[in-house]
Length: 228
Image (cartoon, rainbow, N blue to C red; front, side, top):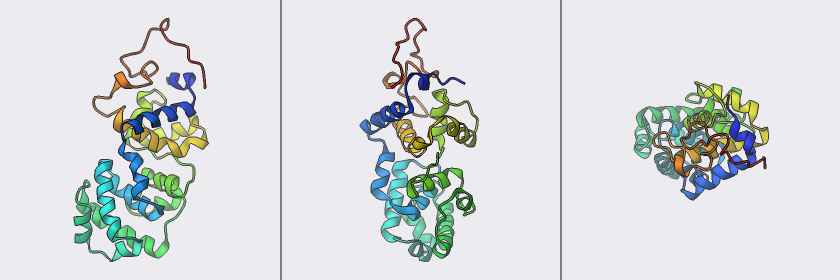
């Protein structure tokens, strides 16, 4: 497993540089907190975001939360009305049914603040549960989506096939104090620099350390940066 980049710079610097580059390019993920707040909205947003770009999810979530301020509001809405409000997201018809079902359950029982109970809810998987735990309840969790999985492997931080494996491996190497930052920062960096297709390797601040880069120097050319 190649963790050369972390040998050269600390997790503090890695996350700080990623966040700076992502914000400089207006990564959509950093706008989310301007539109949603609290466990209910984070939970519904996470369900809506599956297989959908963040800009489309933000638009749909904004439309929905203008009409549904609470789980009770959402539970009372018809599936057809929900569909119209979230039409821009992938599989919106299926998601409309699922979030209405979810709203009914949480309006009666509330939203659990732990992983074990969250994943018992319909349409809530590992990523969604960890997003809610991390963002809404401010507890340590690493939510691994396609961006986190891809970038962790590209940088050589992990060597995994599945997101759950990536989550487990990252927990071994990332100090717990940074777990909550991983998803948002990696997603922002993945949206703007380390893209799925045609990543901006020339502009990447880690191109000299990234094992997936075309710009790796030979050992004799490699700069010495030390740890920070």
